[in-house]
Image 1 (cartoon, rainbow, N blue to C red):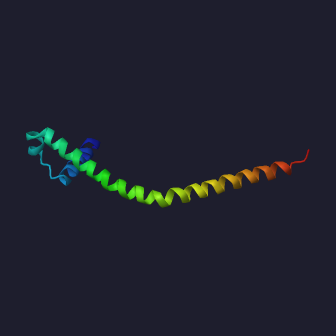
Image 2 (cartoon, rainbow, N blue to C red):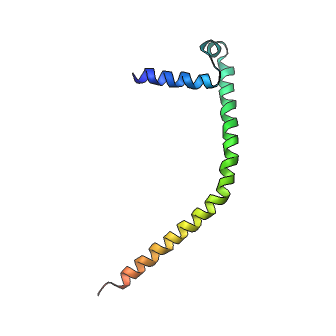
Image 3 (cartoon, one colour):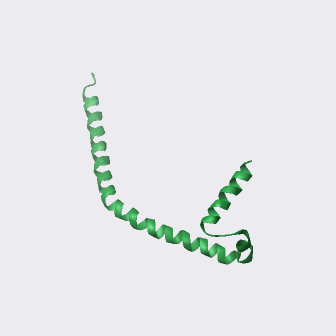
Length: 85
């Protein structure tokens, strides 16, 4: 059953690239090249958005992580100083 579901999913994905079984058998290297080119274009497209978002997200994340670190560090010092000898 898993093989049937996996085959269905892969077949469905190949139809997104307009690939038929005959095209796949006739020009296997061209088909692989087409899939590679499409995947590379998708990565290039996504990379622009990821980098643009990272310009805002990474500094905010760094500030929040730094504040959390210092807050936990000060809590540890406070709890250690309150321990009776």
